[in-house]
Image (cartoon, rainbow, N blue to C red; front, side):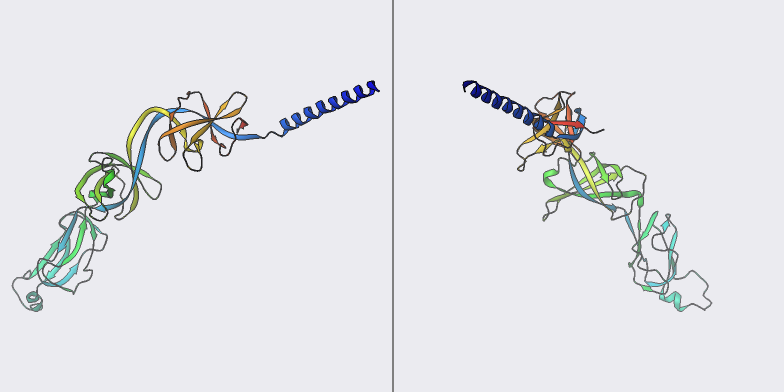
Length: 302
């Protein structure tokens, strides 16, 4: 009887051991392996950016006005024409000259005035496009825009005035995804009472011709940190309240370890890790870290 009890207990123990071993192996088999993309930690320079809406404007507008009252007898220009300085644009006759038409006046030029372009540029605001119209003295006939005086107009909130100063460099992002460099030409010493913004005029550094009233984004770089640790923005994880931040560092055995960090300056694509001190050889998960538990087993995507 005693021997039977001992054999029974031994059998139960063996069964228990095999059962535990089986569950352990099953757990190991079922432990998920997550495929991620990994990139090395980098060092570089970074500066925070501020962006403002900008609009292209031609500053130099030369109004073409009628020097006398009379009838438009000739229009030698169309809207959008490129003209040189001194090119004839309009011909005007006084009432007296028009009354003498068909007569035998001795001076054929009596009462006739030719209006020339005051500067080179493009014809804009063409108010008289056909002959026969009577105009008063001083009436505007058109305007000439100097396309070499193109500026980007930006309204800057006063709290950002330290970012936008004369001589500061910036990037001008156009709607066709192209980017050109620019330099602040001047900042007007006036603040709009309602919006509390200052107007800055930016000279684009390009030979490319841009139309007037084109909307764009102008970006300025503020404070800059040199040779600091940088990761892609997709590598930085955070909680729902954005009070805690971390990255997932790949260590031996392809195990992803959660490393709490403090973020510094960031821009559209990268973010500075201000602490703790990391190693340049650290491998950081770039894609696939979202929702990844600490100490997960990973494999890198090829």
